[in-house]
Amino acid sequence: MTRLSTERIPNNVDLSGDIRLQRALEQWQPDFLSWWKEMGPEGFLGHDVYLRTAVGVSAEGWAHFDYVKMPDYRWGIFLADEVKERTVGFGDTCGQPAWREVPGEHRNALRKLIVTQADTEPASVEQQRRLGQSCPSLYDLRNLFQVNVEEGRHMWAMAYLLHGFFGRDGREEAEELLRRRSGHPDHPRILGAFNEPVDDWLSFFMFTMFTDRDGKYQLLALAESGFDPLSRTCRFMLTEEAHHMFVGETGVLRVVQRSVELSRQSKNGDPRELGGVDLPTIQKYLNLWYSLSLDLFGGEVSTNAASFFAAGLKGRAKEEKFEDHRALAGTYDLELPGPTGALELQEVPLRNALNEVLRDGYVEDCQRGVDRWNKVLAEAGVAFRLRLPSRRFHRHQGAFAGLCFDPDGAPIPQDEWLRRRDEWLPSGADREYLRSIQARPLLGAGELANWIAPPPRGINGLPVDHLYVRCED
Ligand code: BYC
Ligand code: FE
Ligand code: FE
Image (tube, rainbow, N blue to C red; front, side):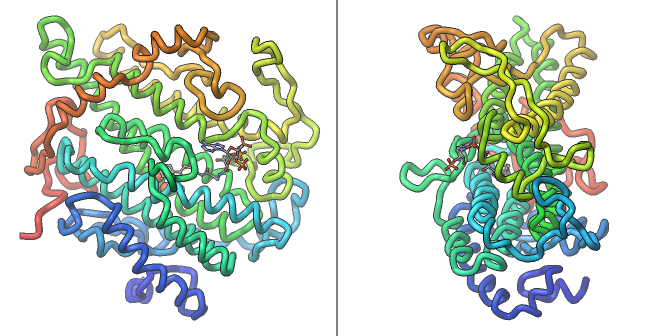
């Protein structure tokens, strides 16, 4: 461990044993840092932040806490431990030895998967870069920055694969990662949700709840990959992902809790009277980020997914749970719009439905979180319940893209959609209201915004009101 921490790029991939790769990454490092300074958290580059840094992959190794200025964070390259004699676990080459190098015939597909995964990491940092200016507490500010530096590390993980295994085009792709910008009209990020604004903390909590959870499922699918370096990278990234989803789930939970408290104290039962967030607004933000995140799984019927699976590049989440790892025989029943536009049941060959299979696991996982929010409401004796809208609602990818459905999944005419959109998704007024209650950052130890309940406990055994982020002097 001490050896690792003295290297310029902390790693457990024996970087010093591969001088060319080490040089290439050391050349990429200053470009990464310029990107971080330009596009990372705005206004806090000089602050000391109480952060967890990965210094190894063992249980102790990745839970090292200390104050650090974000530009000095030690972004490292860590692969989960090697599984001896690992074999490809699915697809046409199921049972053959896993690959330590990229097979020539899969090079383009694999590079595309890695670039797509990589692109989301800096995108999320860009989306969240202004949130520090409206943070509800130092605890939340620190959690935001923890998520940000780890997404930066995830980009390092992917940049390592690109530099290490894809030669010159890999190097070019790694540079491009630092050039695209979330929401930019000419060179945007690759996937839809990563170009959407995250301008308020309710969006941030919904993003980490729903969009980072897409990350969990995509990483689970890539952790199955026959390309062993990708598998090992993703397995370690998953350990970090858990904290991101914790931030989202508990963040929304605390907003819900406070909403109930304030509605009790208010005259008309509306928490907005006292500067809180009402439950219908929370539902709208849920609808938005859940539907945007459903799009990240791609189309219900996908030949891309089928060929990734056949080639052993991208499996199903927890492939070992399935009996048949070739998935050549089965079918999957999907309700899809037919030629007349009406929904009809279609039998799709299983391999073509693998995006939907992955999405199924995701939807169940999301539901478990929503159930925990609803428990707060039930225990408070409130009748309102939050719920996941239909998978057809507000979709921009796949079979339902461009069609209009209400949150129950019933098809509706476009004029009804336009008329009722603001009932279901955050309106301009809702966004403005959230900005108005989050107009300034709360940066004193123990200070907490009025619209959110305190967390039950602090970080790493420290009290909730600890000085998690402090000014240099
Ligand atoms: N936006 O066959 P189809 C994370 C494209 S999040 C824009 O239906 P496929 C994180 C698609 O590329 C996890 N375009 O889908 C979270 C294709 O284009 P081409 C990120 C989209 O290919 C929070 C065409 O539509 N990881 O880590 O089976 C913070 C038809 O596609 C979208 C990955 O995504 C979209 N939403 O699946 C930080 C894993 N959806 O080929 C980080 C790697 C589809 O016709 N990526 N398209 O030009 C993949 O596995 C696949 O690319 C996708 C799409 C699952 C995204
Ligand atoms: Fe990530
Ligand atoms: Fe994440």
